[in-house]
Image 1 (spheres, one colour):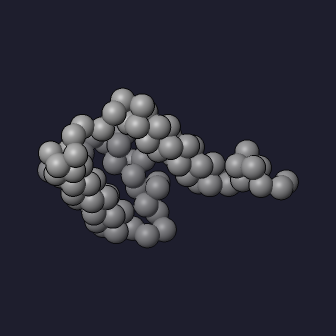
Image 2 (tube, helix red, strand yellow):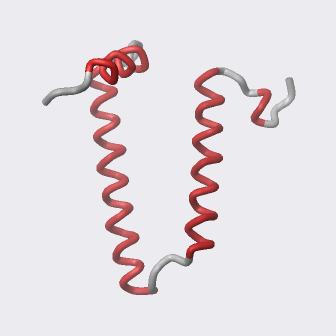
Length: 85
């Protein structure tokens, strides 16, 4: 397996406390979970029809909000998350 050196360096920084193996294992679990969710969505769409564009857009907006919150927490800036300063 070959990992681009710039990506590996970023991962090493992010994984410093818990270790590279733990970081990679966590990433693989997350990937597996996403794959399972995609499979579930496929089954549900077979049963109930495709997800409407507005429903998909709402879900994506919620994911973006969660990603933004995660980024704020990683940088320690809780003030922009609506909490008292």
